[in-house]
Structures are given as structure tokens and as C-alpha cells.
Image (cartoon, rainbow, N blue to C red; front, top):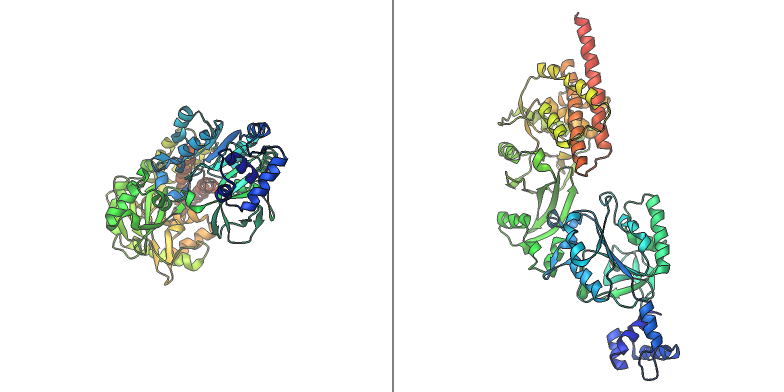
Length: 581
């Protein structure tokens, strides 16, 4: 039975006129008459337009059985709110998004509800006792889109509603009776959708400007088997960037029928601005980061636009926003950052360098929690560590900074930092020969200390990504949170290991910085710093991994630097000692 027939059977029992039926269901009076005559012929209606026992049996046998709510993702577009709550728990008009959905499911008799959680999973725990739902934990939400979440419960997809946690419906979108599978689309035509819903409910491929995909679907048992199989195949193929809806697509065919909802009866909450538009009184709009922006720039939250994540950094979560047609960046320190960085020391560094033309313009920096607002550097790009000219320009700025000989009251102590990161991870290193390699690295300490010729403020985090180049070839050095007193040659080594340089590239970098005037001892001291820096950041990666963050090949590369370059320098020192005997 199709959706229109079901709707007429569900509605006609209220003794509504056929004209009113046509208006309510948005179909012609002639179509209503046609459907009613067909329902009478099939004995679903009697001659007086009353539903029959056959209809009642049909309703009972076609009641949806369960629901799956997908709530595992980061919700990165919800910055800065997603630093406090997962988006399913955002409050709209006095209730959280996910609780409204659960209540609407309960209204149509659906109590078997599984919620797939991941990011901030603990925040959803209260739903178990309050609504008797099942929480399914997706530990791979960081590496996969929501396809993996649905895959985890693919064995229960049969007469099932599948829906996201971040959509708000004015009216209950669920029903006590379903038959055909369907996917919900919005009236809005958007460039990101390849699918257009026709008047007959068929979904047709359209290369651009299709109906907006809402994320809610009803999947009957027949289509559940098909989708379950497709999900398994996609997971085997490691299709990490796919969404579960990709399992509905096969070239230019869409597996399910389309159902269209009026744009003014629903809202997808994917950003701070969408929440503001839907409910300007939501308690979640009272956010620390937003209040800081309001106070520093002297604006109202309604003046803050185009909020979006800059990138998910290794340490922080940063987002861009626009006020009065000017762009800014706000940094919110990431998980565990308070243990790694002294924000008071960072504040002192910025006080030293803030007037330099090669640094970003800082409007606000809180020395207690690390929140920072800076002007966005327009028309810039990250330097390319494989572009010799970019490297030269970057080293020119680094050399200029070092020559200014800035002084602060704190030191970035490499050796203490290595021990500090070891203590944070609280377990033995995952590398079997760690203790041996650490011993090699520690043996480099006397050689390094004997060859330090200058002690000044250094950037420490001289990653090529932290060098920005504008259209006029002006170079900016940003993100000074690790900066402290050190040997300037350490910055050269840090640039090299962040760039993943081979020895040949490291030598080229040294020659560029020193303009081909470097002694053998200094060159090997920089190699030693490569080893020390490698061990340092390897420990940093292991600590971060204990928090659930994995940096893949970067982590392994740092350990290799520690191993290979400590051996290189120790062999050099051994040969040097032999010559001096």
C-alpha cells in the first residue's frame, strides 16, 4: 500500500469530507475519489467510508518496530558549542533535540530505540534511565563518517526509522503505520544534492540542484536486508568518508521512494547560526566563546556570522567568524592542553613579539584558559616545505626573529619535557626499544650543551604550516604557544622534523638558514636536535594517543628521527674522539 492510501485510511476515520481530504493531503479531489474507490474495492473501506477489520489488521501488521538515532559525530560545524555539549543535546525551545525526537517516537508507540554515540558519549548516559533507550558506542567515529555508526546496528534494520540527532521537526514526522520505505527530503533545492523527488515519489538523479537530504528514513524489512548487505560491503572497502545514505545510491538509481517535507516545518541544526535562527533564546547560545567575542569586538551575537571550523589541529580547536565583513579566528584549547602548555608563559611571549610585522594581530588572549582571538590573515597560504623559495622566505623570517634576541623568564627545557610527556602517558612506551633509544638521545646532551652559542626566545613549534605567505610574499609566523628560551638551532631542527625531511633536505635547510656558512659541529648539533625533538614529539604523540587521538605516520616518523639521528651523531662523536686520541 502506498503512502497516500495509508494517509487516507488514517485520516478518513475522522469523518472528514473528500474535499477536505484533498486539501489536507495536497492532492486533487479526483485523485482522492480514485483512491477511495480503490480502497473500497480492496475491502479496506466499507460503503460508508468506514475502515474495515481488514484495515485494522493491516495497521497492526505494519507498525514500525524500532528506531536508530545516529549521534556519534563531532558536529564540527557547531563550533564553539561543541566544546561543551554534543549537538544532539542542544536545547531548542526548552528541550534537547534528541529528547524531542525520542518523545515523538514514543507518541507513535516506538519504544525500541538505539542511539549510536561516540563524541562526548558520557553526556548521553542519562537517556538510558529516563527513556529506556539502548546506547551503542562507536569508538571509530573519529575516523569514519556516520556509515560506520549505522553498520554497527545493521542487524536490526527492519521496519526501522533511521535518523540523525540534530534535526528538529515542528510536527511529528513518525507514523503508527508504514509500508513502503522512504527517505525524507526538504523542499529546498541545494547544490549539494544529486537527487530530485518527483510528484509520484520517485527519486531521480540530478547532477546538481537536487532536494535537500534531511537524514530521516523509514526502511522496511525488504530494503533493510539490501542496505545491511551494502553497508557490510562498504565497510570492507574502507569507505571511511561515506555517509550511510551512500548505501541508498547505485549509480543513478536511488533505492527508496522520496518523501518531501515543507521547509518551514523542520530545521537541521548544523551550526551556531542555525540554532540562533531557530531559537534565539536557547541556553546553549550563552557560550563563553561567543560572550568573549561580543565583549572584545563590542557586538551582539546576531552580528557574528559565517562561523566554521578552521581545521582540527593537533592541540586546539579553532574557528573562523565574521563581524562587520572582517574575519577573525578564535582558538579554544583542545583536550589535555592545560597539562601541556602554560598559558601565562604564552601570554608573556605574545607581549614580547606582538608589535612585530611577522606575527598575527592578537585582540584577546586569556592567560588562564588560553582562549585567543586574532585577526584573520587574508589572502595567505601555508608555506610549502617542498618549495625552496618558500623555505628561504620562512628561514629569513626565522633568522630575523632570532637576531632580535628576545628574552622571557621561562625556558623550553627539552630534557624535562621528555620526562614530562613520559609521565603523562602513565604507561610504558609502545616502542620495544624505547629505553635504549632514549639512552642514545640522552648521550647527546653534553655535545649539545658544549655547542650552544646563543640563548634567546625561540618559537619551538616552527612547523612549516605555521609560516603563512601572502600575495606580496610577506611571511608571517603564527602560533607561539610552545615558545620559550632555547638555542635558535632547535627551531631549524623542528622545522625539519615537522616537514618530514630526509638528511639531504635537512642539510639543504641548514645551508639556507646559515647562508652556506655553518660549521660541522653546528650541523651535527642540529642533527642532535632532530633526534631530541623526535623523541620529544614521539612521547607527545603517545600521550595524545592515550586520550584517543591518533596521528598516524607522524608519530612513527618522530620516533624514527630519534633513533636514526641519535645513532648518526653518536657515530660522528665516536669517530671524532678516535681522531683526537
